[in-house]
Length: 102
Image (tube, rainbow, N blue to C red; front, top):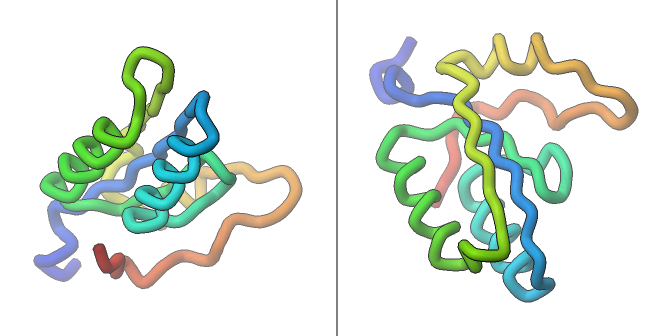
């Protein structure tokens, strides 16, 4: 495994935003960090510093009294996450090359 990917982990980010404007902002933020598996569910492969940046970006865009975001650590292996994920209906996007530009 390449050294630049060693400290990356996979995350599932799900959110419930109660205002249409904030929802659009949060969705736009998340498009910069990962791939949408559903409208409010994103798969991300991030270094620790990028996860922290994502958390800060989300916290700034959200109303923390009304909205909610879940960030679930799925471990370091994107392949294992994709292989263990069961999908009913439309398939998930193909495995990425691991590069996400922010």
